[in-house]
Structures are given as structure tokens and as C-alpha cells.
Length: 268
Ligand SMILES: [Fe+2]
Ligand SMILES: [Fe+2]
Image (cartoon, rainbow, N blue to C red; front, side, top):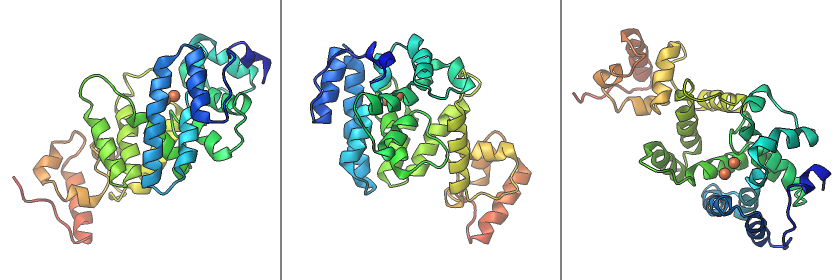
């Protein structure tokens, strides 16, 4: 293990059983909050992996390791990343907590001896996702998000869970990414990997007319409307209530609907 990590790692019981080892790891580091979160993500990742025909044991391993760098104080994360020769982006220097996904990957290799590149890759992008993500990356990413028990009512989390269970994984991920995107003025920054992931997935899934203005595209995607079939369940009046949509956009959408043999709903 690299010396810089030794300074942060208390000796723990390195059981061959990763669940036992991780439980002991967080317990000796007195981080029960991360342990509880980790166990929830691990059980969710196994459940979601089975839904999508992915190896649940492997998903459990990635989930158990995804937040191991939480034992490093946030104020030390950049320094440790530098010592480990991890490439640090400007955005990560401004908001150092976000580098924990890369640190967890390095620790999975260094402390737990993980060599499986799929597991390491999923750990590395579990907070932000990234462009060209694999199905395995997406499963770990979304399992982390839907395991949060946030106080209050968070409809978007309920919507994500439904989409994941309906095997609409990309739609579920986009609900989360759009939720972040909508808060961009409030947030300190948005990680470039997240921006690239969102743009790529929006392109992949969108069946909207290509000539639509940017504000109209944002209004629709921000409301979870990426497919003409979804839009056809709404009336023109309902669509016009979305900020960013005007009569020109409505005409473009109407024409695209007609091309597919669809129309706006007649409900008033
Ligand atoms: Fe995390
Ligand atoms: Fe997490």
C-alpha cells in the first residue's frame, strides 16, 4: 500500500469475505454512517443488477467499495489524490469532495487488491457518471442515488425508482442528471463528466424534432419528456405551460407527432 494511504488506514480485519471486511473497515474507522449507506447501496445494486441481467455478486463488490475513501477527511482529499498521482480536474480542485470517487477507486486497488477493471471503473464514476459509461457503471451510479434517504418528499427519487424497475434505466438516470442540471445556478459547480454523460444520454434517448430551439429542448427534457409517445399524452395547452415552449415549437412537435401517426391529447 502507498505510504500516503497508510496514514489514513487503521488496521482492520481483512476477511476474504468483502462484506465482512468492509463492515470491519468502516467500524474501526468509526464511520457507521458510511457503513449503513454502503450496505444499502450494496443491497440495491444486487437487486438492480438482477433486473438488468448483470452479475449481482460483482455489483455488490463495487457497491461495497464505492465510498471507502470517506475515511479520508475532505480537507485532505486533494493532497492524497496528488500523492497518488491521480489526475485532478479544475472543478475537483474547487470542490474537493467530488474527488472521492477517484480516491475510492485507488483505494479499492491499493487497500483491497481489486483488479477487475469493470468494478474499478464503476467506482471511479459513481458520483458523476461519465460519457460512454457501461451498463455496470450505470447500475452502480443509480443504486447509489436511489439508496439515499433524504429528509422530506423527493418526488424525483420516487420517479427514478419507478423507471429503474420498469427497465427504463437511462430514463431514470436522466431524471437524476436533469435534476442536477436544473439546479446549476445554485450549485457550486457541475462536474464535466456529469455534463458529458447527460448530453450523451439525452441524444441517445431523445426522439424530439432536431430543429427544436434549445429552450424548448430544455423545457421538455427537464420535465422528463424525451419521447413523442410521452408528449402525445399531453394537450397543446399543457405543453404551452412549460417555460421555453412557444407556438413555433408546438408546430414542430405537432408535425413530428403526425409523422409517427400520433397527435396531442384532446383533454382540456
Ligand atoms: Fe460517493
Ligand atoms: Fe455513496
